Image (cartoon, rainbow, N blue to C red):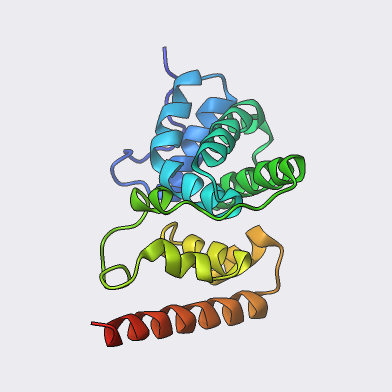
Length: 190
């Protein structure tokens, strides 16, 4: 029997962070079924982040699955602070960095790995989105993906990546300028 959520308000009216924290708390209390909603709520962001670090879809999937195993085993260590997604992304980051140390390589992200992640929009209409994102440095790409796909605030990205806020803001600004410049160059080729 699943453990009830500890919150007094119905799940529909709870904020996403509060609901995610409630599921983590249920998991910590022994409700193994709570990992399902955690996975459903976070899988896109976790996969995108792992992919941005590892640049290989198979490695990113492995890291993502390892992340949910770690969440399951470490749920009791989570301290509710209103930032459950930051905790999850930090787990994913540590696993990816460990995996990179083991692999000791950086490979270019294959174009097909970006297709399921990015929507067709103004960035990818004239230039291939993967080429544009691969033109960014690793840190810039991670910051852009965490902000645009996962919806993290710059302050949260700084915490997750262990960078000063000013660095995150500068790198994000430069990355967006690069993407705009590449997009404009692509417009000129029409």
